[in-house]
Structure formats: C-alpha cells, structure tokens
Amino acid sequence: TQISFFSARRSPGTSPSPPIYRSLRTSARLPADILLLLLLAGDNMSTLAAARADNFYYPPEWSPKKGGLNKFHGQHALRERARKLDQGILIIRFEMPFNVWCGGCSSMIGKGVRFNAEKKQVGNYYSTKIWSFSMKSPCCQHEIVIHTDPKNTEYVIISGAQRKTEDFDVEDAETLLLPADEERDKLADPMYKLEHQGEDIRKKKEEEPVLVRLQRLSDSRHSDDYSLNRTLRDRLRSQKKRVAEEKKSARKMGLGVRLLPPSAEDAAAAARVRFASNFEKNRKDKRAAIKAASIFPEPSGSASKDKLDLALKRRNIKASAASA
Image (cartoon, rainbow, N blue to C red; front, side, top):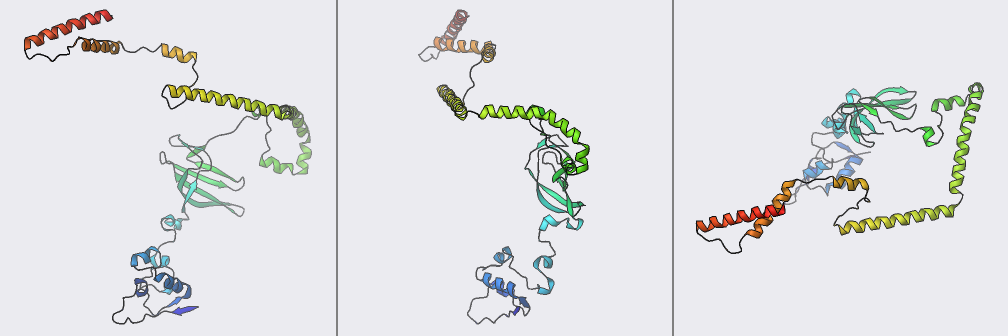
C-alpha cells in the first residue's frame, strides 16, 4: 500500500513547517510504513540536526526508486567494518578463546582479550564453513591468525602465536585418561573391538588397582562425616584466631597489613644489616653542637664571635672523643 503526500500551502501568519515536512514536499508516492514513521516523529523533531541524528531525514533529491538511505549515500550499513567486504573480509570483535604466547615478543595474551579481527572464509568442512580470524597483538603488533576447526569443535592457531599448554600427568593426578575422539569413533566398530579385545583386557588389569585404590581412599575420607566436619571446623577456628592475633600485632606497630610469623632466617638477615657509620657520627655531632650552643643571642663584635666559634669547636672535639 502506498500513500501520496502533498505539501499544503501555508497561510499568512502561521508558523513555518518543520524541516521534516519541508523535505517531503514532493508528489512522490512514499511507502506507508516510511510515511507513518515520519509523521509520528515529525512532532518531536524540531531541527534538521535531530532528524539526521535519528536517521529519519530524507533529502529532497531522494526518491524511492533510488532504494534505501545507505544505497542512496553509497555506503554500507556496517560502515567502517565493511570496508574490505569486496575482498570477503568483515571486521568483527574477536575474543581470544584460550591463553597464548605472542610469537613476536613472547608476552602472554590472556583468555578473553578482545581484538578487532578480520574475518573471512577459508574453506569448508562438509557444509560447515571454516573461518579465519586475523588480528594484531596488543604488545608488539605482531599478526596472529586463528582458524576454526569444526571437526574437533576447536580453534587452531595457524601463525603468530603459540597456545599455552595447560595439561597434567595422569599418574600424578591419580585419574584416568579419557579416550580421544578418534578412538571413541573406532570403538563403535565391532571389528575394531574384536581385534583389540586383548589390549582392552590388559588395560583393565593395569587400571583396576588404581580404581580400587581410589575407591578405598574415597570411602576412608567420607566414611565418618561427623569427624570430618569437626576437624574442618577446628582448623577454621584456629585459623581465625591466628589471623586475629596477626591483625592485632600489626595495629600495634601501625601497619595496615598482616606480617608473616617470625622466623630464624628473617632474624639472621636483620642481624647482618649494617648501616653506614657516617649517619651515627653526624647525629652525635649535631647533638653535641646543640648542647654546646648558647641560649643567649650572639654579640655583635667579631672578636666575641671568634671566641665562641673556638669554644664550640673545642666542645665538639671533646664530645666526639667521649662518644668514641
């Protein structure tokens, strides 16, 4: 449905029409939804700047045959993010999925750090697209390229960085290693299971003692809930008392942080500290000069001043000899 919009003549003495109506004084046939939005917004838009800010301004040279405003102005709806869209590249905000080491300066880039990355398609895995994300590291502007891996539902670093390895030893953790995706797929094959039945029996014999030991350890720890709860509460109570005493001792010394308990190493290190001898000497000399100074104002004569300086030097020498 289309509605024709015609401008009416303004009678003398009436106020001029708002800019939004003056811009639409044309006999072109506008779509009903656009015209309805313009009519509803016309009362709230008293200036041309407000109309432009809300993207409701249609210049006089625009017509529906020229398409939307983005096409009329020759720009994309995504603005600067689509400046390389002709090359198949879109600028997006990419979040680092794991901790990595920068390949340029070996600095660590934490998980969750965001970048302005160039996103483009580099292949397909069946019907799923494989995306490439290219970005600059914040530490040294080194280029990092990461691809998606739809097969393993993972991200793969292609260049510019190295993923931080955060694994553990199965034996030290006393746990079991889950089979990989490829091995799980093979276990669904009856022929593969038949061929590797002997290996499965051997793995069972090796891992059975570990499972039995883990079960016994779990049973021993959780057999008596009352004792476990009592031990935990006693430990927490003693810890609270120790923290309160450390805070009290820190407040006595005027400190805002808790100090560690005293140790023999700290005492030995403090005993080995030797301050410079000049500091103590200067302190004693200043104290001796203060004690030797007269409480009366100095006379104006130069001879009396020289006598006083000489007497002060003698007293300083005697005070230094006595302190040594």
